[in-house]
Image (cartoon, rainbow, N blue to C red; front, side, top):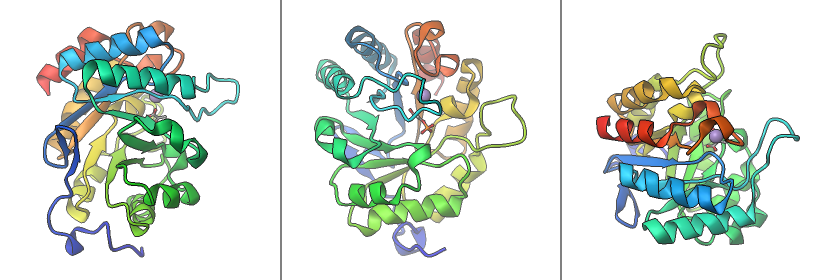
Length: 258
Ligand code: PEP
Ligand code: MN
């Protein structure tokens, strides 16, 4: 593959991305929050809960690229206002997925721009994000090789933005016991091959809340720089990804164990 900026051989030191008090790539990070922002009350309550438990970055989806056009697509601009409020109330930096560069002005108060697995090879989006100042968390597509992930990261870096965070979130396999197959081998490979921070998302990989804590711990043992966990006040009623979302108490227990 043709990439160079991502490679550790050309940049020996770990890339460290500072967002407020958090140094991604140096400190271990715990990103948590709802899959999807459903209401102001839900976002604010969840933000307080994950902060109390020890999360240092807050997640919340506003634009949701769903497999079915009939599934809930997120509250969009309204959701980002609730995320801003949650950031002001908790002091936590935030991350949210961007699907269209035209939405960028709406992300003014979002600290990290997330590229979802389905958009990992949306090269025009990657190039535009490469011209921004904000850090980008790039999720590996469920059908992409490690090489392809690194090529996508190179697209962003080649435009000037060196603040790229990689995220392993599971790949497709023949076994449907779990939603995807969490590729922790990829974490070890990435830490060796690149200087970029690597985050693991065991929530989307497992698809089942009861399996998330063990895989979050395994991810840290594999050398990840942090994990991203979906948390919901009432997973049974979540509009998206309830089955894999931890309840507040479950998240608090995991945070302590981590
Ligand atoms: C998400 O993190 O909200 C998400 C949609 O995950 P992925 O892009 O990995 O499916
Ligand atoms: Mn989700």
